[in-house]
Image (cartoon, rainbow, N blue to C red; front, side, top):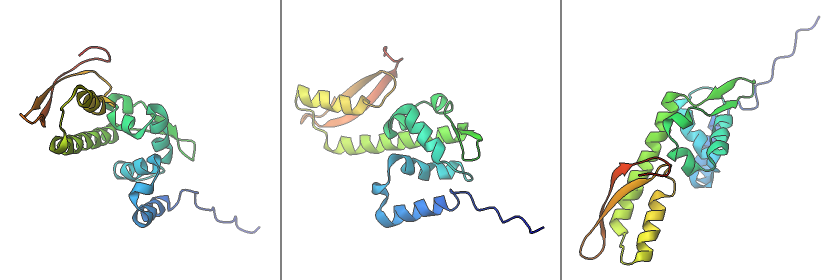
Length: 166
């Protein structure tokens, strides 16, 4: 009786390296949101296919910004089935990594906004506040400090509330 043919490798074999090559070649800014999220998930989930988890995160929260703004607890509720039918999800370390990435993005945005933001009208104030709060899951009470040229000196969060109460 002839030996069984060797099993072919899973379709996702080599996916991580192909994705990294594509990011290096075409540029990371050309990747769709789920692949950008995959690149980040590779670090906290060093083995296995993370594409189902990345897609499940985006399906659950609706956007990359909303994934990053989600609470650690909410992130840990996300589960996805891998190619072998096993249930995978977001563990505590991965959720904390995503929360840290959100905080890094928030601080960079705040730093950049602080360099350029001039709030010289009611419309400019509303625009700034909408952009600052659009992906926050809870209300916030903030104090904006301006200099005598109406340039933003500091945007300080005084309190975080619930979904509808600061």
